[in-house]
Image (cartoon, rainbow, N blue to C red; front, side, top):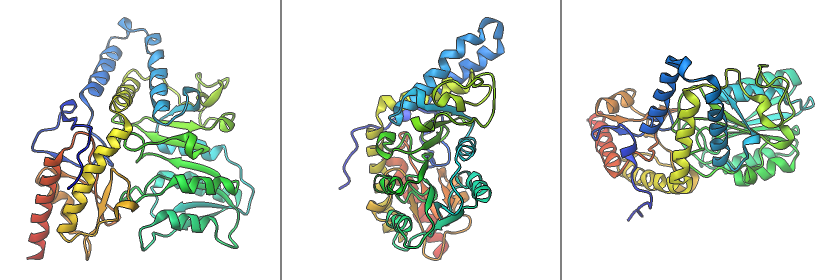
Length: 377
């Protein structure tokens, strides 16, 4: 018996037809109605600028900044508003100067936005990039800890990590890894794209130098907007771009803010989504998604698919594999039957959010079973 979640399905806040099973929040989320309405209000204001002075939108900047900070246990002064995770990572790399001879640590098959800027940093500072191979037993945490402590390895300069592997939701336990990174004096950079809004994130617990996340996935917001947390001792650096908002540099992480900051569309949308998540509670969201992914996991096991152990995956993303590999047209075939998911690095990635219910899960499992049976005939 799978325990029920105390948070009910929130489908009423979205415009998702009953016959659509959208299990692809890890790619990008549908907008809640309140978020869409916030964007439409911003578009109307931009359409009639004489009736909406630009000064009216200054408070939206701080509203979004404050809501982002609250979800990760930070203060508004610790948060910069940037255009994307890649923008954030370029800013971070610009402000690091590790001595030559060290190493930058990351996991195999990492998302490119977490790689490019640090590949350039490695070349500039004569560092080695060390990639932790995917562990055969699925235990990324043990593999990363072993890499940090590897005898004879160059000193660890920077660790660029995430709370889970983006391709399949296998867990990377930063509660255990972050202290090990700090113990050797290395910089900890966290891409929390696949975490904020779906599982508890607390910078006071992990103590990263920098942490970033966008709004278009689990945070239920628009595309083209992200937030960058900078620890207090990292708030005196150089912005990636100089603009009238950050020159001369303000105090705190605001110095890293992007240009054209007072967006009348994206910022109110982001704030509305973040505030909705806060209203539901991240812990309650995480519990609900764990309930749904466990239902999916058990059903996938019955279909003969390979499922990571519960202890080795995060609550909200389930990556399953098929012996011999997934059928090449599986994602398109699922979509044709109104089940929406992704394939990443050979895994079928299933990622429900609060709009999903047991009916969506059962429909997914039924369609998946039919398609796999057809391939075996």
